[in-house]
Image (tube, rainbow, N blue to C red; front, side):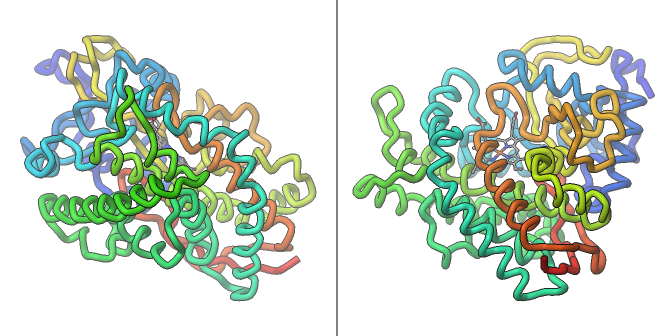
Length: 435
Ligand code: HEM
């Protein structure tokens, strides 16, 4: 598996390389985990090269927990800029450069490094801390309870994603951004064009049949719509500031100056898109696991001290953000491989969070797992800004479910999204017995 012509680098064989970049491979969870287990064991740091020259730049696939942690925490040695922070085909990068002058269509927190990144991050960091979020607790609890009550009215058979895990986090994020409920479907569609464009059910526009260039044009259109939309919200919040995060961003000063329009739009877009499909995927995954394991459902119902454990395990077990990319700032060594300055690396959170060296019996959903220091929120300077919010809203939702639902069982085939970036269940048919 190593290649002398490439200085002895561990080159991933073509079939495995295709599985890593093929969105459809991500629709089948067990097969995907088998692939990553195999790669982690055989080549924990593996070179992925395109079959067709020029299709994408080669990158290093990193699958071991320790290696992903090391890279994530060393933000000086492994940079987010200037290469795309998610896996991209060269056609998409070329289009983006022509359209915006940047390799990425959106300039947001995830694409900046120091010294800009810490200055931008600081603007909203306090807002996302537990002591500020405590203000939202009453509203979140009410919303969680209302969502579960509505599901019970639809029952006994429901699509949990459509009725619960999808709409609840979407409303939470839209509320903190000041987006009214009637605009939610538009926001959902735009997010899925940005993140889930590889899945025909989610993008709603046949994007899976299109060339990379056509896809990028749709994504660029989604970005422009987001930009125009949030420009109006920012204008309103400058005139009438409230306590929401939209007001913090609209009135933020960096070095005494307001954010440039493109960066302000990027800030709104990352908050608007990062927080709902991710949380939805984790919530739905946990419900699927519990529906298949009635003994564990009964145990967590009886022992509410397990609530934080359900949430943490839901996030590890599903790892909805499946990867991010970094670029090496200098030559280094990783997992026995020589990484050159400028090399591109894929931090594979799904693989790292199923590394048996860190998580015994990693495929088992275990609400009592301890320790559970997963990497699903990343680590280091870019660690998820919304992690306390995600945990809080999930806790309230599981509280409402455990209070109101006696029994939950699978009621049909659950399907996962075909997406290499943000992934998870897109349908989850369940049979619900009210408490
Ligand atoms: C289960 C839910 C979530 C998961 C699994 C998740 C995962 C992640 C991951 C893996 C990163 C990149 C970390 C890195 O590069 O080290 C990230 C960044 C980010 N997330 Fe989340 N996220 C979730 C929910 C949220 C929510 C609810 C929000 C806000 C409403 C949010 C906002 C952000 C932002 C703004 C960033 C960029 C941070 C930066 O680059 O400094 N996320 N998230």
